[in-house]
Length: 119
Image 1 (tube, rainbow, N blue to C red):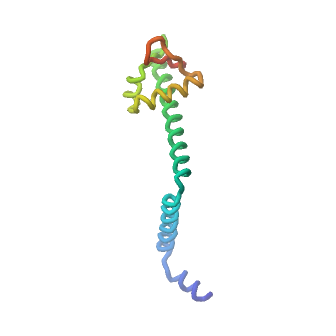
Image 2: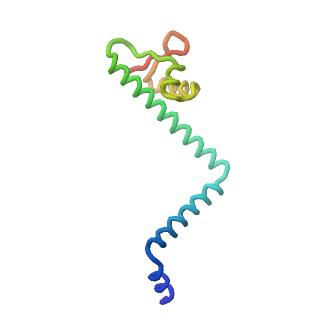
Image 3: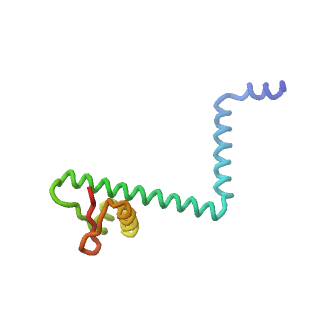
């Protein structure tokens, strides 16, 4: 027991902190390497859903700010223009718009590829 206390007291605190941080980093890397394909697929799916929900919120926010800037009339956007504005792929924007359609925050416009944002 005296040996352990002498080793503990002889090593400076910053080295103990460095040792603990390194051990936690190695453990995190091992968990990532040893995860199964199913767990990796679930993690990827959760990340994709989170990104789509975030994109949908950005689209809704874009509609609100546009409506505040131009209060009269409706906010009509093109899928392609919205994708360029938000710097996202058009298929991701369409998927996010469909999520907002389910939440009744957008409507399809009469023209193909255009959407009306409900604000």
